[in-house]
Image 1 (tube, helix red, strand yellow):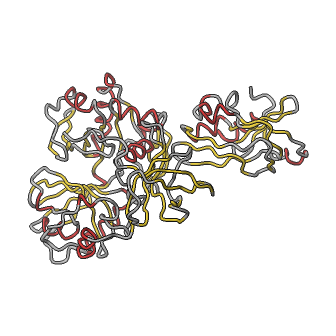
Image 2 (cartoon, chains in turn yellow, green):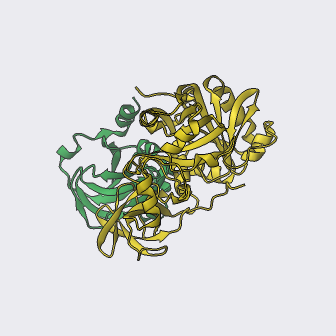
Image 3 (tube, rainbow over the protein chains, first blue to last red):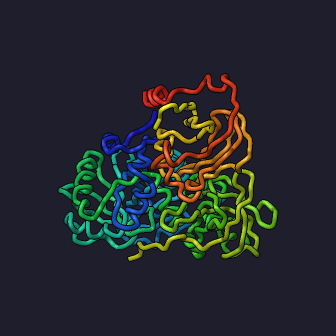
Length: 365
Length: 125
């Protein structure tokens, strides 16, 4: 059965077009994806992302346990700091990509993809043998809102949050007398916060944010714009750009894999080998030169030879052109600026390899 | 504007005007598609049979094939919507038509087409 967030009625009231996504009935757009996209880039937008999963890992061995299941070095985290990472299988393939927050030494919050909650929990449980930890799936108790865009700070100030946590940090806070977690994270490339709150308070919070945000031009934003925003920021989407057969290094996420981590982790041998040696495939960004839109699954060609496929692609509402992410054979002659082709409806269209992200990120503060 | 308009179950319309047949997408179709960002139309002179794909319309979310409501030969394509695909969201039944065709389609090709009002009832019902 399709699940609904606690804001489902709000979305219907706002006239959202609803779609099924990862087993959830979610708003894909309220008015227009392009308009919503620009709202987030120019002012501020409010997203219901309550479909995302929340898993707490706690216990004496929480740290060594997490260090076993992700390549990232969790021992570098201090209280209230977060890190982006991937949970890998024994072959180094990505089970899911996550944000791990250290609440304190023995308690961590993990935000996981809605489509992967069951796999994630299974994989964690399979790996907990010998570790003194509890893995608690709290996804059904929490709702998650994202407030994203350059006006976020002003809006939060207006609502009484005097100081936001630093980038990739979390703090306890209070908004409209509701206790919540405020995290300086997001999936848009813009500055913003994500608000983790118990389900029973989310409707009130949603209404108050929309009301307080009016003077900043706030709009509710659907999953359609969430996808175009993250594509411009070249942030990967699990299931499109990441899967169990792709390692973080191949996915261009090597920056999130330290090569000097002491602890053993799943897939370490393969991943560390890939860091210092040539890999077979790699992720690239590209922009279309010819008029055509590259989409998931389309083939990529170089000098008449098929070299890979598009994993995410579409329009860039801010740039006005068409952009994509693709996996290609790791040929050394393919560099930034190299011309390649994308096969769209049986015809080849010219494209050019481009540096990622496609739109400069503005969330480092 | 919708007077005489006949619609397919795949959301195209055809409208006869002075011997030429105008083909477009219904207002319901463009509303479902959302922001339209790309339109690919055939060459003038190309011939298509009923139900054959003759054009592609892409929204932000996806690419959609567009099918011929009746058989015919492309007489004119709407260049305006190639350069400004968003016009399709604004005026699909009017200025943002897709193609005009010459057609000698037999009556049988019209059997499964619905009057615009019946079509609207069906999609909204």
